[in-house]
Every structure is written in structure tokens, then in C-alpha cells.
Image (cartoon, rainbow, N blue to C red; front, top):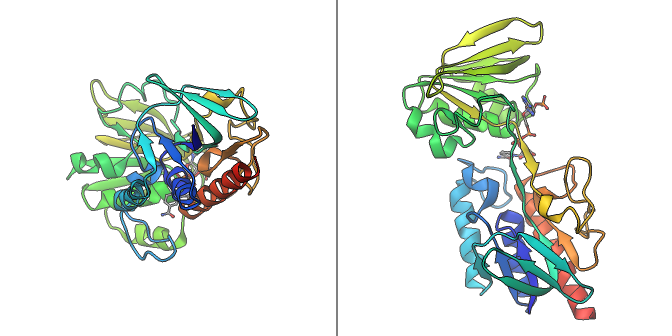
Length: 301
Ligand code: NAP
């Protein structure tokens, strides 16, 4: 029996692991893919207090090492179902079953898709959701970035270092990103910003050859690109937990700043829960809060 099982090894889950271990409790982190979560794809973090500048990969690796050095167990197995009992919980994976006193769900969120008919077909053939991972394949080529948030702006800046031309296509006339980065983006000579527009078709046979773009007046145009980087935010992936804890209409686990769900002994941390600000700092903060609350509950049992 573990004291706490944490599902998800992103910033929230790994931070929770640190606080559980430092409270003298045993912890198991279950992760279905790789450690780090969304931040691993961020080229540069410049807004985490105390760290002036670090890559997402380096940040996540430091965090992972910090957790494993505290003897937190990490297993790369997907949680596929949960059994909720008053005094204990069981997490089932395809390989095994694990028992704990308290559970922390920190599963983050996955990439939102544009929802275009042939979007999935072109993944790996010009469509990507990760500029850091795939940007280098588009050296000296023309690409587009979809979105107007921090991720899209950062991706466009990153790609402008490799690509001959970068279009950034956003559906409104304003960005939803940090002013400082927008200013730098606007100064780039190989970046063209296309406001008030949606990508309505990805054109190509075996790989992306261009995009049909429709502006808010209904006018369409063709943009010749070999790559499309989609950065239009994220959606939660909480379907496994829908009968366990209350979700809101968008699929986020309902919890306040105390990270407690409606189910006794089940907590949630990071981007998978209802909240207004989804940042690295708030994910780390949730990790600490959920872990300390979970440990406090165990002490009272
Ligand atoms: P986001 O802030 O939610 O922005 C999503 C962008 O995609 C917005 O421009 C949005 O347009 C657009 N969009 C959403 N759905 C769309 C659709 N179906 N079609 C076309 N456009 C669509 O997402 P994000 O940029 O991934 O950032 C997520 C969170 O992480 C944010 O809190 C962000 O600040 C944070 N973040 C921080 C950093 C950093 O600080 N270094 C880096 C990356 C991300 P509208 O504006 O019109 O809704």
C-alpha cells in the first residue's frame, strides 16, 4: 500500500511527488508516456520565478531527477481504471494494480486539434503540434503556425530561426500572449502575421503543400507551406475519471484552490482541473497543495 499514488508526471505530478516524499510518505507516480508533460516541448522558459532562462526539457529533467532522488517510484504505465473505497483506492494499469490511501490526479491536458478533415492524416507529414520537436525538419522551408497564444508565439519565434518564412494565423485581431514576445515577433523580417483568419483546409497529396485560409469577411486565400504547427491550446483527458469525480462541461475535474475533488481522498493538480490560470507556476503550486493536503488527511486516518 502506497500512501499516495499520483497519476501524471508533468510539472504538477512531479511537484506533488517531491512534497509527498518530503512529508515522509511513500509515493508512486504513474505516467503513460514520458515525464515532463506539456512543458517538455517549450523551447525556452523565462517566467518561472528564480530561473532566468531554461529549456522545457532541461526544466522537466531537473524536476524528474529531483523526484527520483527522493526515492519516489515512477512507473511508466497508464492508469486505465480506479476503484474507490473509503479507506483505500486501487489504480489498475494494463500491467498491474496498485493500492494507495490517497490519490492525486495530475494528468494535464492534450493538444487541441483544429478539427479539419485531413488533419490526422498529415500528422508526421507536415502537421505537427510540437515546434521544438519537429522544427528542424523544416529548415529553409515555409511553414505556418495556427494560434495566437503564448505557445503559438513562442513556436513562431522558434521556427523563424530555422525556416525561410513563418506565417502565424490567428482567428482574432489580437494575440493572447505576452506583449514582450509579440513585440519581438513583429520585428522578425521572415514572419507574417495573418489576423482574423481560420485555416479551413490543409492541401496536399502525401504531405502538406499549402493551406486554404478564410478571413472573417469570408475571403479565402491559398498559402504555400510545407509545414503546419498547430498551437491552439489544450483539452483535458479525464475520461477515465468521469465516474469517479465531478467534471465540468469542458471535461476539467472540478476542484478549488485546495485541489480537493468531490470524492474523499482524491485530489487533483495542474491543468486537468478547473482553474483560471494555467501556468508552470500554478501547476507546481497545485502539486504542493494537493500533496500536503493528501498527507494531512492520511495523518488523520
Ligand atoms: P491558449 O492561451 O489557450 O491560446 C490558444 C490560442 O489558440 C488562442 O489564440 C485561441 O484563440 C486559439 N484557438 C483556440 N481554439 C482555436 C480554434 N479552434 N481555431 C483557431 N484558433 C483557436 O493556449 P496556449 O498558447 O497553448 O497556452 C496555454 C497556457 O499555457 C496559457 O495559460 C499560456 O499563457 C501558458 N503558456 C505559457 C508559456 C510561457 O509563459 N512561457 C508558454 C506557453 C504557454 P482566441 O484567443 O481567439 O481564443
